Length: 182
Image (cartoon, rainbow, N blue to C red; front, side):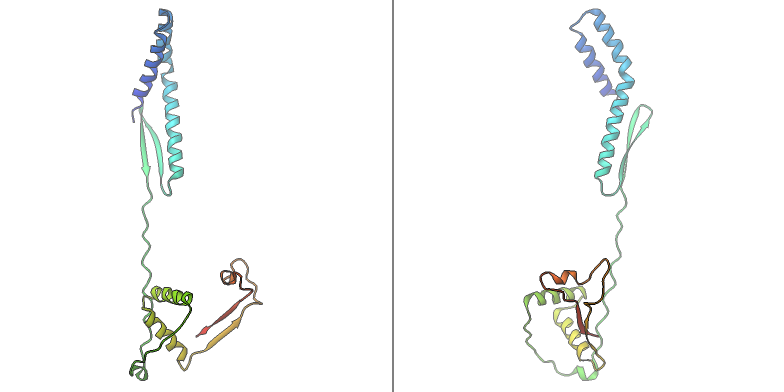
């Protein structure tokens, strides 16, 4: 960026302001305008550098630098490359049905609270499965002959820092139980 036109505009404005005065005032204004040239350039460079620093502060990643090249300013804009996160690995395939599970299908009506259904749909989607397939997998796990029903009371365990049960206690007392099938 060439700032010479801006400095010349300041010089012309100063000389123009002195035109209403005497010849001595006009000559003094012209000499003063040339003497102020370096100072005006420095002031403009500082203003531009501060602007670049403010722009850099607003950028999430990257920076704007101002560099002096002779009498010209060069802007250098650096933007951090976007890092693409690798796709998460696919969820494990549900266990293959055993011979006794290959029989006829049965239809079951399940009535559950809407909030529980919504959370189950989220879990199924996260596993890359339909709600039905996900529920069949849960029932299969629970009915496996080696399955263990777990019901643990963790209310006496002190959690330092992050309490995994804090989000579940909003207006529900101190419920620190874990239940489920292993």
